[in-house]
Length: 131
Image (cartoon, rainbow, N blue to C red):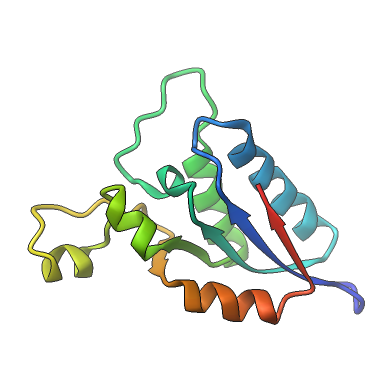
């Protein structure tokens, strides 16, 4: 890693079917390749990227799997905004139990988090990039 690397926070506001989501992933990969650091990828309006029940048509790029591989290979935190997630029917097991929901569907590798975590990460970042 370069000693003059920067710390980035990425915000994904694009739906999983939109180019912005895939562009965000590719941008993240390029940052890591250049030795930059990503302290958080925050999914706000792009909650569909975090839904483990998303079914990708054959022949289409599975962006959800790409984000999961980024998390697994580089330990980049993938944070799904909890308020936006619940409004769109995405929750983890703990929230499903608390809300007495019949199932949970937050994809593996993602975690729910609040705007406070996003603000803290952003305040400590050198760059904030939105897709």
